Length: 275
View (spheres, rainbow, N blue to C red):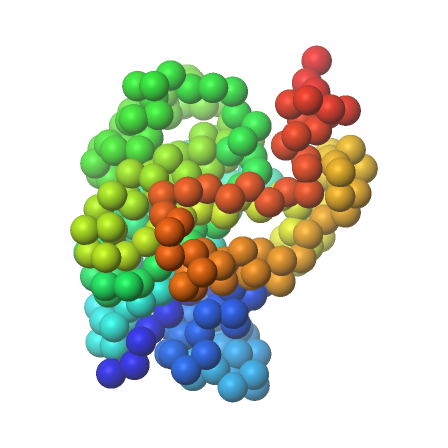
């Protein structure tokens, strides 16, 4: 049986990481929309990668469990690339929390039950998680360790506390990095590793849409105030993903890698400092 790399969210970033870590392995491309998975599969097939496709809704336990069954039927799951999610411009606070926070916890739980010894995974979080103010130690622990099915019932996540989509997104992405740190303990007992990458503005079709939308001015301001003075590319995220999933990253687990060209630095200590 082949080693299997599972990619959840078949967009530019998921594909970029997969291309760096999947040579000689089977890539299972899963997305909420089958057409997205098929489009990614065609590109990877043309580049010589063996792959198959599946549909998954990360906010549904039954759907994620079905994906796990497909993956384990193909071979040993040695890699997980979780790049699915919705942005503040795409969804309500409740949907963002259900997909980005609960969905990630669900994926980590279910794939953490089957990840092979020596395996590794990456979760795509966001620079937004680094722009949320400090939480209490108890809140951090709740986001990291609350049982998945109880997560959305936390008092800090109720509608009267989370009133806009950006706040929901920031909480979700902070929660992703905290959850991965806690899951790294459990994954470690199986001899596997898991980390997060928190990208800034990466030029994907989604980001280009944001740049031309109501949040575009804010995006351009972030880029102009950053040290890099530009957005990033999916291939740059792929390079970090390859490090974290490969042998050179063997001593790295439970970590979060912020790669945003200096936007967060400018937010806290530079031209983007909030009033």
